[in-house]
Amino acid sequence: MKFAVATYGTEGDTRPLAALCLALNAAGHDTRLLADAATLGSAHAAGLAATPLSGDIRGALSPGQALATAVDRKGGFNRTARALADIANANVMHWMGEIRDAATGCDALIVSGLAAFAGLSVAEALDIPAIGAGLIPITPTGDFASPFLASIPVPRALNASSHRLVNSLLWRAFRSATNAARAGVLALPARKRVWTEHPMLYGVSPTLLPQPADWPDNARVCGQWTLPAPAWTPPPALERWLDAGEPPIYLGFGSMAGFDRPRLVRAMVDAVAGRRALFHPGWSGVARDALPDNFFIVDETPHDWLFPRTSLVVHHGGSGTSHSATRAGVPSVVVPFAGDQPFWADRLRRLGVAGPAVDGKRLEASALARAIAFTDRTDIRARAAELGQRMRAEDGARVAVRAIEQLLSI
Image 1: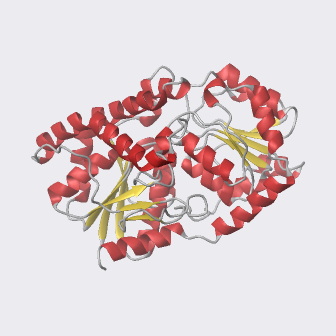
Image 2: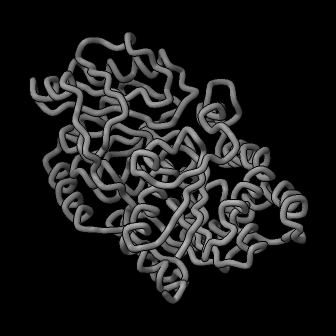
Image 3: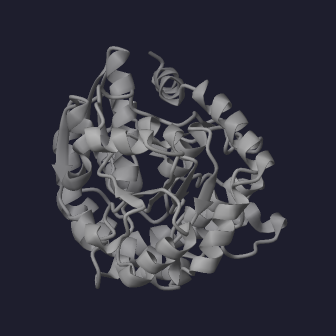
């Protein structure tokens, strides 16, 4: 079977889809991954066929841009949704053409992220099956509210309605540009309502999020989609530093940008209080010489190699990093900024591997220090080790491949 796999977002959005492509290829299928050029490093390293989509997600997250502003301020769901819609709406005309070209002759199209509506439209035009691949649970359920409303108290009775509301609001923000592209690129009629009938497979661990009993048959929690450990050799300086003392605190905020950088540095330095610490600058823009000697600056490093060598992971609460920290068997300190990050922060708290989230938009050293101290508790560390063992026994990509094959009756 031949698949086009289209997504758009940060590296945390693209890397799991690369893992899914690799698993499909290993099962004898043929895939091509489409995503933002800056996020395709893991796909290229894995030897996958990959094509960049139009756009510049890193530029959209640079200081002063709308998405960075939404992350850095208390803009809430509406501001973040508008900023994301602006990115998609500016590129959807190009995306539809690019995805159509890649998907022509394919047996199915797998869609994810900001490119989902474009991909679903292309599947309709080519008359091939579309399969959603998600890292955020958006299928309505009574078990929990929409992840995009995690920072807002939602009565349990309204949980399912909150999903439908958010999905409807997102479609409304994307609808006009999507319909214009449907007409201009694919000669399709305007679509009035958001798609709900296509299957949804989630690259989410059932250890972190058990399958809701009220989900329809076409929605499934598969497990985390992870790339095999690469043939990777750590830089000698990093290996020497790790061997020279106790396991360090890891701090990194992935693709988050637009920080008040001096405030972030002060908070990290004061909260760590002289302990050994690794810092991954990511897209934060923090200068390497801004940190004291107890901090070791680490470049892009495989999480499955690095996190088990740390004492805890301080991160932004992205789905991928939340999974990777838990899989490593170490506690988390979650500093969410936007989107679904508060949802994963709450999941880790409920599971007993993290304390209450630290507000990323008003980061204070005292709050960060309290959260770090909380993870030193014996029960927290024991719970993290237990969950890590359970997650390492999962094979989410293989589960997803089997589900795709069943859906297409292979």
